Image (cartoon, rainbow, N blue to C red; front, side, top):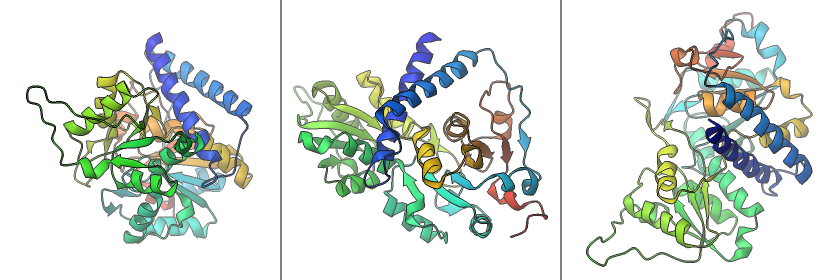
Length: 363
């Protein structure tokens, strides 16, 4: 259990460090905290997680998780900012969830601010803007944040470009587009989707010794060649960093079923290298720190809305936010209310359409 807690804290610490760099990126945010305050935040975040993990083996869900039935009284008056996950909350695959466009419009009419933060790295910020537009969702580009952008911002803030190294990408075009914006050379990605290594006697995969980082994001064309190339870079190139956009177990490629997520790609490369990745996706407190300072808001007036307990809701509970789980994605009501679950949102609802289930809400 101690080893598990230690490894968990290391993963959480790397996530915090990655989003700290994201928050200070000149392309994204103004600096929100000093190195000293960052270290303090990392320490506090680790202590919170240690307490939660150390008790998870013998603690059942004792809190009464309330289903949202009176949003006009219990939720909307106390929230100024909503942070929404995308997959499973706004859409499933390429289908918008029923009632979402009208719900977002109603929230804007109430004066609520909104941000959309996704761990999915298949698209860049520009790509996600196009997806929002194609689904009839009027969302400004500055409200959208993806883990592909977070990976690029992490590399930018660690001055990766100055090292004269390259990035090998296991992932899709979203990562490549974000790397192009910061001028970091890269290869791999979709271009290696059809490659098959020769494995006859004496055969081997030659790899570029100038690769200084391997970025692993969700990849619908993952193959053995990519895994082999990534492990060669990480195992044989001194100082080569292993960066994961996220470790989500499952994702929504279609609205018909769950599909294996980026955790499976990351796990394959972790398994053959023995190296823990630097994870740049949720959960992290630095994005929240930025929003709090930028908008002058109390964290208690920000609500994280997501469909995953271990990323979205943890993102909220560990950072002093209100949190709401929706059942329109990967988490079932049975799992939420089970004795094994120790991550407790303030409320849960079938979808965010229920924000206006109460006829007393005026817009």
